[in-house]
Image (cartoon, rainbow, N blue to C red; front, side):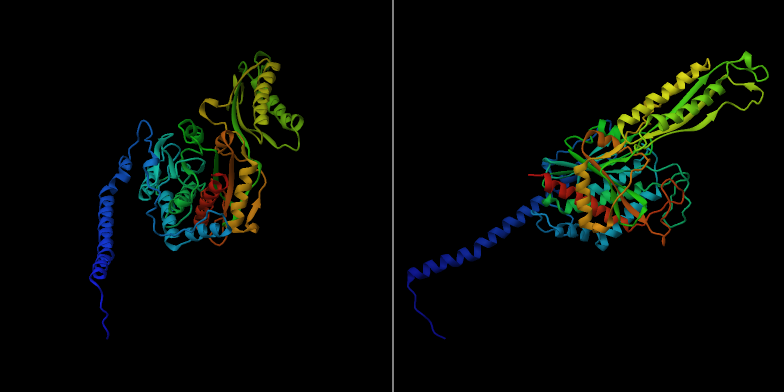
Length: 485
């Protein structure tokens, strides 16, 4: 080994160099540890606004600007999707299908299924949703429309896009025997709203993990009372759509195999209304009808005349329905009654036609009653929020759903579906802003998932849950990519 002589000046410079190399990183490490410790000390402040789980008179409003966009959900990794490719969609689907994510989302759905709650009574369901949001450190406003929630993920800046799930169950006794059968007598999630909530919470987890990719803000709307009470209408009134420029929602469908997605542009679901008419005459003995004013005759003529509204006044290529479903004149066989009560429903695919039907139904009852010297009143229950306008998909938003679904499940697994005479209060959102409603299949004959909604035998194929979560997440993230800055 050889040694090389160095001057004293070189020795000084060498000593300074060694000092910089060794000491400076140590200072940096110390600073980093101190910073980390400080951050840890402040951590509880991130979730202090979630402490209250009681119903508040006014919704708690969270300032998103104070929230970190760094996700603590470390189950997933996300690549840079500054340029959207099919790989971005595939990545979202892979996240949703991770074993731990699938197990978790199924557990959420099963908890909700076991404890169904009717319209505006979704207190435990709402509490469960808020607890899951808290775990993900997702801010939210609560309550809206009694039990509703408006959660926020993203930058807090425009554009704002919303995803909606309904939470309420039905007054039906479950007839499906399985481990997680409803534990509440006479109540059941017989329309899949438990799955809708689970899929949206699943989407929240994915979006939070990919929050750095969001070029705007995603609003998650957990809505009460779709089945009765027009919860959507009340959510809008309470500010659920504040700043939102587009909204999307899904509904499970037994008509399509599991994971198949279907929708259409334009009218998808009919506007729906109900009526009750009371025709009044003068009671008398049936043996002396000339001493009475017979409301049965007037009511019978009105029922016949109602049929001509659709058959002779409506375009045969524009589907409409008027159905009388109840006719009550009492049960006395020897007396002409004083009143007859008739009830029914009407449906149409455009708002104009819907309100034209309402107008003509009222006219037919009142005018036909007068022909037979009777009087009539007609109640459309407008004060009880039983009128649902048609659900109409915006052309652009429908194309967005089709594009996202085709990427996720393949073009052969996206179907253009026919309009249906069913009704949905998502229609209130679609009246206000561009919207798209779509179906996601749950049909699996092997499992027995073949029964229509509102059946006591209704069940779902839970394999749909991760697909639904991924679809929601991809719709929102890609919308922000397409329309964000």
